[in-house]
Image 1: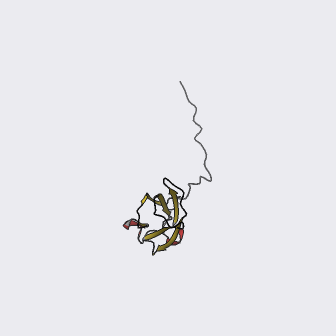
Image 2 (image 1 turned 60 degrees about the horizontal axis):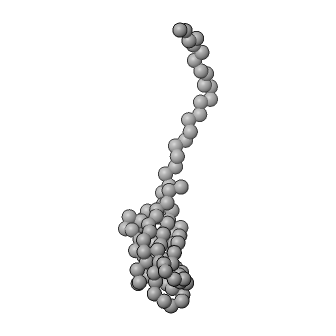
Image 3 (image 1 turned 90 degrees about the vertical axis):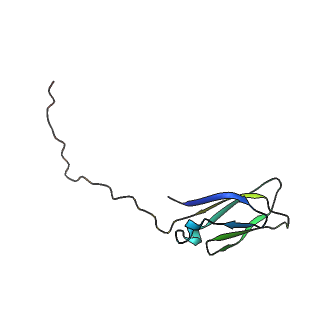
Length: 99
């Protein structure tokens, strides 16, 4: 399945700005955020997701943020695979091959 993905490093303000081309193209309820602490253990969590445009990250331990992120979301419109071609009465051509 096709998904939108963005990744980077969380800045000290804890705000992840989602790409502009996501607006109107993703299902906000499918946004998933993965956080990886850098350097030391941190109690990282998603505080909120604002209108599918921003993700707010916080450190439950109260320290500064230093982490990588990956955000994924499903598209609103999923292009479906074309219907398979079914050959119901297919009969191969039975020609004799001659040398």
